[in-house]
Image 1 (cartoon, rainbow, N blue to C red):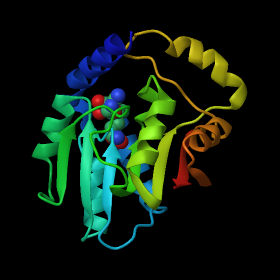
Image 2 (spheres, protein in one colour; image 1 turned 120 degrees about the horizontal axis):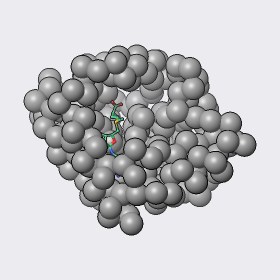
Image 3 (cartoon, rainbow, N blue to C red; image 1 turned 90 degrees about the horizontal axis):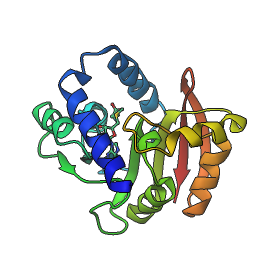
Length: 206
Ligand SMILES: C[S@@+](CC[C@H](N)C(=O)[O-])C[C@H]1O[C@@H](n2cnc3c(N)ncnc32)[C@H](O)[C@@H]1O
């Protein structure tokens, strides 16, 4: 089932990639990236990871705001990555690689920060993914988790919908569940910030 789920997600995003930056949701995503930047704190010469980077818009923004930053974008979809590489305004500071969030192809303690914007909701095994985030973060590194949130009482109903191999299925997390996920990977919750409507930024520290 895991394989089918991931294959279906890849197909969905490969199909979406050519129009991704031109459709209405992208306007929302870019407004979210802009708001997120208000809360980002990075040490000099940071090395950052954007997990589920899509077309690379967030990394381009980060590289413009932090001129000495180096960044890696990781995504499941080759077509999303093709566009991210084409749009890369900061090569070789920014690079893009294909991979899966639940088995990150990086050694331990590589990154000062890991970003995840509107991607975490697509993961079938969230505990594994957050464990991987904790593994690749340096000590005191930050995890910036941005996703649509939901009240705690709604979560069980949404989980039932998620347990299909359907590529469109997503899973939403309440603020409380995000903190529990962080705890499970020994990440300290730092703060939550509302970015846009139901889109919540949760910041964690290793
Ligand atoms: C809605 S897009 C968000 C892209 C980008 N973060 C943004 O803010 O515009 C979700 C992205 O997550 C990627 N994705 C989904 N499941 C993944 C997985 N298991 N591992 C890595 N990337 C994944 C998709 O390919 C897609 O590019």
